[in-house]
Amino acid sequence: MTIEQLLKTGADTLRNAGIDEYRTDAWYLLSYYMNIGKNEYYRNPGAPVSEDVRAGYERLIKERAGRRPLQYILGKWEFAGLMFNVDENVLIPRQDTEVLAELVIRYAKGKRVLDMCTGSGCIAVCVAVYAEALSVTASDISKDAVDIAKSNVALNGAEVSFVISDLWDNIEGEYDILVANPPYITSAEMTELMPEVCDYEPHLALCGGDDGLVFYRRILQDINRKITAGGMVFFEIGCNQADDVKKLMSEQNMYDIKVEKDLAGLDRVVWGYVGGHYV
Image 1 (cartoon, one colour):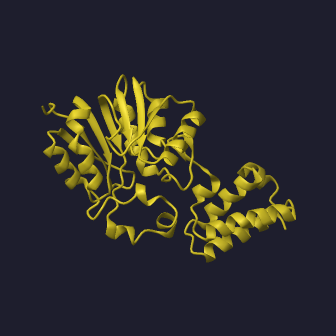
Image 2 (image 1 turned 135 degrees about the vertical axis):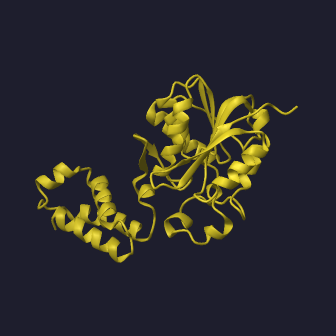
Image 3 (image 1 turned 180 degrees about the vertical axis):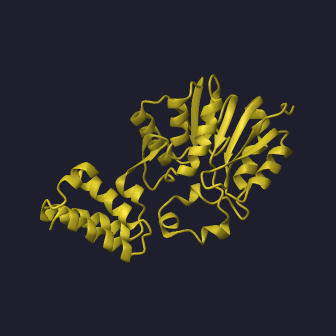
């Protein structure tokens, strides 16, 4: 069997399994397993492959056909130009979230930044690498997630402090910027998720309760005590949650609240400024 035939067989298997991006995924797995790029492939697509290579590649294809996410099979994924370790303990970094990271980076110079619900640490690491923040702290309730995030700090040569915390429980001191991509999928929506998400990504990082807003309420309850007056809050949201999250922020004395859209034109980030502190 040649490399070209092996790739076609893999793509056919994924197509038959109902994988939408079957050609792309088949290529990613081939490139990963054989450690080759497209230049090398196109120079000699007729090169023969050994039986061991065929068997190894087909094992990966079988995993993907079983709907295990490509990113977890590869163990790494790119986000905002950086590479991140990922496994089933953290959400897969998505391109939509780059809008959130880019906004924070724009305003983080000289600021103390807290990334809550950090997961893989992709936002915290990007802020630490790309912005001249005074400090970057990341928190998550999951120790396993924090371990992955720490590995990504090392992978990218960043400087981030970590706290294992259920939202504000173990967070000390004040910050100038809070960024959070909290669980925001409603309980009803959880039953409609793709198998790749529902069966593999951590539900702890997905479900936001019956209306998807539980974590926004909990975070905002203490916002005036934890974020400096005039400080900023950035939330990723579900595409239908902008008005609800804006209302919750306004109820906590926040002002100049804006909505940012993702590349698909959907509402993706709500952000604004913290008012005076409560006594």
